[in-house]
Image (tube, rainbow, N blue to C red; front, top):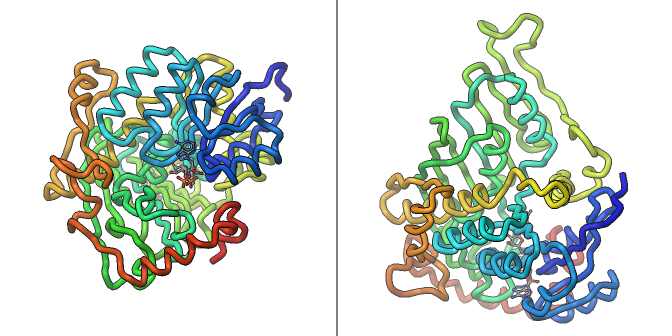
Length: 423
Ligand SMILES: NC(=O)c1ccc[n+]([C@@H]2O[C@H](COP(=O)([O-])OP(=O)(O)OC[C@H]3O[C@@H](n4cnc5c(N)ncnc54)[C@H](O)[C@@H]3O)[C@@H](O)[C@H]2O)c1
């Protein structure tokens, strides 16, 4: 398939943003025309390699003649960038998280509604083969109606790698509270079951001063979080994320006629489906376990990162722009997930109380959210804003400060990341 007129895209942020650059393929129908990063060495290198315009200034970048912008800048700064891009007439695909404070979330929803442009929240995990297969099976009725689910994104990394990708004391990776990065565990559950969260309670596994790996970094947040959600059909969902030992991604979907889940460890890409012997339809096995394929574009997807999910995200964004129909992960779902992260932290600070996730289609809800500037960003400290750990101030160890400084001094290695992920 080729497209007569490619969608001209600009990418902001050349860490994760490199993925989008690599995938501006003919089948997706996108053409990279400009890149933006404040990190000049990185920018110049990538600009020369891809022969595209380069900008260090986001506002100047927005003046470039292009149709769409991909935001892969800092985790907590996406909403303001998205709003500026929409006002400049560009469609937006935004990395995690869609917004940081509830007030920013409301402003983002309003701007997408006002502009009529496409906004896509770019979580790639739902597009992994086993999650797409679970969605297909769920829609066929294979396990009945959704009643309970789990989503896990457990991602412990070495102190070396951590310091390499969190390149200053105030980089978001060194303070982001452990409930906020929840979209990789939540988005697959929403995608498979077509449900959305309406209530949240957050539980935090606190900072661990005896974790020797963490002590070699300058992180000031907690270890991990468990989030309990009620979905809009009454189902209960448990999310687990962040820095626990036991790396893995996991999704479990339980219906009132069966179960689907991906495997653990070496079987992570496998799918298990179980229907109980007392009620399964004739001819259907009790247990099935298999390695599912992508429904379409298997070859193209397999060549991309994150289990193929990255390809489908770009594909969905391009399709949305071409058809004028908002994508599955639209601004409402994106901001809902951001609210889960923020309100779960508020809940954890308030004895795990249950907090309602309001209906973002309601203008009165957006009015109320516009006054909620809850932020654990150390740059916003003061007033009612919390610190990034439920324990209060966490002082990095002298060893952590020294080791981080040593890693940060090797800028060549940091710039292009050669082999970093292996350590
Ligand atoms: N979906 C995934 O699998 C996945 C994986 C990694 C990162 N991410 C997300 O991608 C985003 C970026 O993360 P990252 O890993 O690349 O690390 P990062 O946040 O350190 O990188 C951000 C990049 O944006 C640039 N930048 C920051 N502010 C800028 C500005 N005002 N103007 C221009 N450029 C600016 C930085 O110089 C840096 O190169 C985050 O939101 C993160 O959550 C997603």
